[in-house]
Image (cartoon, rainbow, N blue to C red; front, top):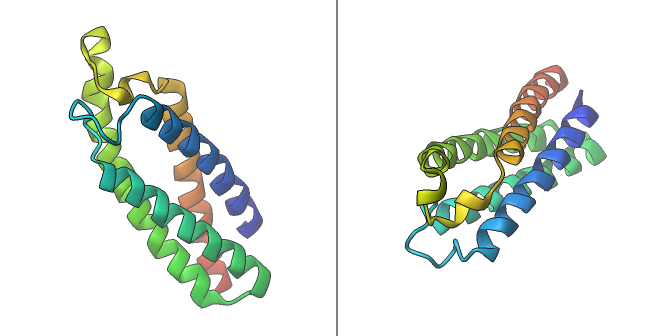
Length: 132
């Protein structure tokens, strides 16, 4: 389970990097039209990356404390992700009338990122509880 969690976490990260790249390339980090606050987007990235690094260290050293910290960070990441999704949905529904930079993020990438994120969270919970 722990290795499967790593794989899904990495796949989730790929989708996240793609979305962040689209958002930044459209000026989302500096445009007033963006519905995604830059501190939330970058905080989501920072917490997810930190959690992923801790998960890798957990796999390498087997220290259960690292798994629990990674899980807590992942829950925080998920909460920020849901907040961003809630702000993205109205922009997506606005269709062509929206000038928000996140409007350019394909819905299939958002959905895939979300599905892999949920799978990651479930696998991390199972692996962490099994390791305790």
